Length: 360
Image 1: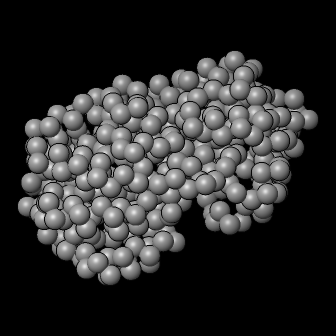
Image 2 (image 1 turned 90 degrees about the vertical axis):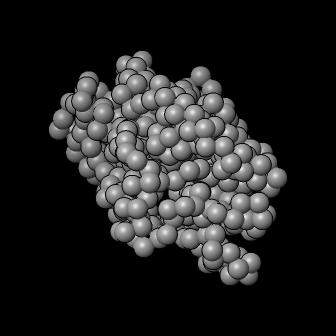
């Protein structure tokens, strides 16, 4: 089998989609021959990217023997239609926003293009429902989650790791419970809501904690304003973007991972790989019971699911974990086992290969 793999989300760009594309490509090429066409520049240049991909894809298909074309996200379905004359099976993965993006022209074109492709892989049941809502044949759809690679866990003493973190980064966290979120700072991630509604009541019950937020984005200023207005500087720190080494250390010194997503029309959480990364480091996850988050947490087996926007439930679950070290440790160990059993990239890649063989 020879696969033409096309993606516009690939390292050195950083992000969840980029990490997923890189790992899927890396694992596929262990079993089959893969020709990679990638774009690692700005996503804002997507209409320049299409002609670039079109020219390169035509050249590959004219000069090399390829059995199947794989497109890594919904926007590339336009490219898939132009490659139809080669009479090769074309498979596409849909992540979430690439099917729900609220633009009339996008919604008029993209679902129609996806419908004409041979197989659609959705990363969660929520993404599948959005595809069906837009007229994509359910019989063409397979649900395959994103995968996980064990590259963050440090099997070491947490106190020593915390001291190392403090020495390197000057944050005094040795005696605090550490809550952690890792995400792009956009509306649906709910960080602004969590900071505004949950942290102020949580600090009344548990003063020895700090909430660390990794990531940047358009609502960072909004979050900073909330912190300032409510004088929450002692409990919240926005760390911005961090490199993988620092992120690895943060996962392993933290006590609870928070994913407080809120419903935003037209912008769904397709899955949530960061929750798998956190759980693999034995951190209990508390997250909104919303969209693809449910798939990533196996309907509450890997993490604790809380109704979105429910202030009291978030407070209650976080306090339970903060106050019971044994419960927190047992939950974290169970989560790590389940992540390995259900999301290891080797098994996920086999599911992709089986789908490729079916459509061939």
